[in-house]
Figure 1 (cartoon, one colour):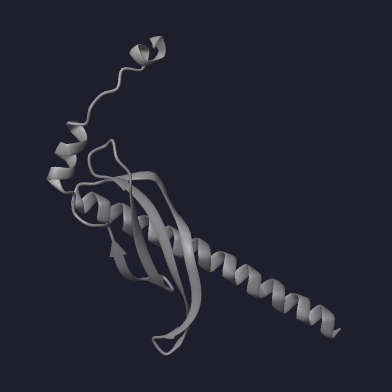
Figure 2 (tube, rainbow, N blue to C red):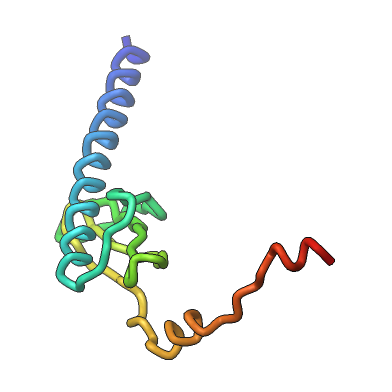
Length: 122
């Protein structure tokens, strides 16, 4: 009897964790998408991935603190990683990386082009 009760408690806890994780992931994707739109960035792959999770005591009760990563593009031909941190379903922080450095963009566009056909002949 106790083993059945224990199994039901474990199953209930697993279902709660799964449902809570789905809601948190949806919230992280929604806030990441909005942050990218507000900054004029392109939210790539339309998804977030869990980078870390730990239990904490916040707002007077236990919660899970989750860190999600997502990718975005500033120019359309680049990829950068952003992060959103949630406590439960509440957004704590969102990080979009440092602003684009114009000199870095100019340096990339002025990079030498290597002709692979001429290299193959030698």
